[in-house]
Image 1 (cartoon, rainbow over the protein chains, first blue to last red):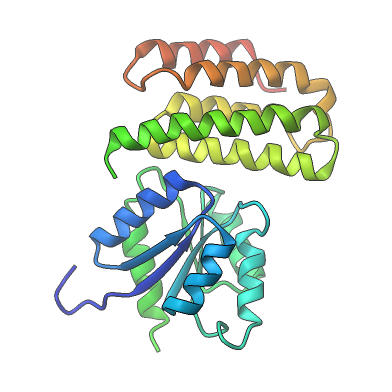
Image 2: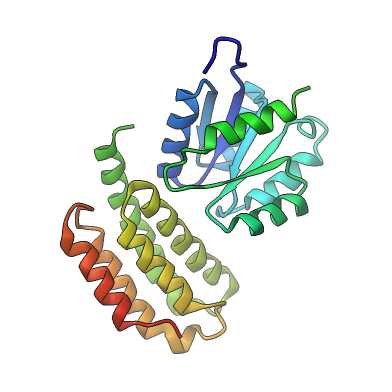
Length: 130
Length: 114
């Protein structure tokens, strides 16, 4: 991370603790300010108390899918402006279609090492800069 | 997070996921239980790839293919359960153990896609 790069506050939600741990490490190492949770309850608390600048959500989760979560947040006045990025191991073309359908602001395929996660998320953040 | 810690975590959570899979499979004609089956398989596959257990990911993907869209769950249940037993055994093995990958390959050869 260069000294001039913004330290984006990113909130992660993923029911996989393993995926969450790797993604958190990768993003923190790249200069993101990261909070992460495996539950919707934890997500709601961080959303209110921490005010993330971007949300990265898994797609395939129990209780509420990432796409459903995106639709809900985009219809809330308080969160409609927060960029939401879908992250999944599903095929990239399917993920792109799902992101369009649920009005997500971007998508990042879950690669094996998540090596591409930080630059792709940073690109989304900078594209969405307000 | 250190790699050994991730591997330990993977083994622990995979055991839990396999338990949920076993519980859900006999009732997989129910949409909610089918959702559990597909979600757990999908997550095992993804987590296995992330921690480097490529052979487990291959077996999980193969079981997904065996199950298809769920319309033939009953007919495919026996081979699917055999696959789950194989994953259960594989999870105990280190990714550096050559036997793990060879057992996965043997399983895949014995259970060709429909």
